[in-house]
Length: 326
Image (tube, rainbow, N blue to C red):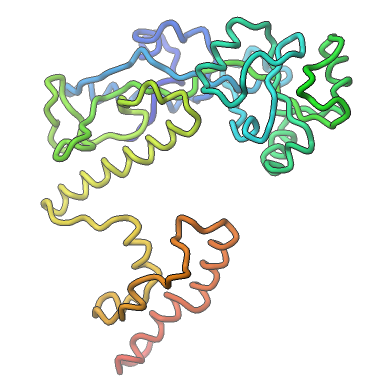
């Protein structure tokens, strides 16, 4: 089960309505697909659950012009805050540290005056230019010629000194909204139970596996840190996948994803016949691991492999072995 969380369903019988009522008044960044179906299915066959009353809020859900009352909101990435954007209140003043956890920012909003705006200067935006342009083109962010222009629209005397007065600004009006669920089905984390859904007694349910927001994370306190929910989805997904593969292979060794990728870009004939030399089997001393390559380096490597690597090696293999080519 990898059906996601339940933060998109506000219906009367929903998990939100029955288990997390305190969040019902917030908008959401989830659509109707995040309905908790996987959690409900698991419960119906006796699966245990935990932390269903816990939903993480994001402080940077965009309030689009003319859509202030819309329940669904678009998330403004924390990459904008990481590039130097400032959060200001209705008075034009900062009220929190933009790089603190989502929970800390949401709590600061609760004691500050809305509406809130996320403001980034044109210079700061250079490091995330593509993202800012994406938001601007879709009206998630508005542009202002200067801080005074924004202050005039807000009807305040001036903005926080942290915002350069003469710079062009990109601005998103933001509000807290439901973001990710840290509660769900209980799953194992140790050895034979890893990735398996557990019943209410803590025993694994045969043949049932789950990952991501359909499960309850053991890291609730870390959940508000940027990137943790996505990291958990990846880690728990691989853990569940490994458990499924182990069952299919009757407990035999399971090949790691990294090894599969490496084998896919190596001549199939050499892999099958065990003809790889030690120098071919191991990367060159000065060659970076795939995970350390920049986007440009990775693109260049793929182009090189397409031109000279696995495809060429596979085509040449039959002729080299004395077999007729197709």
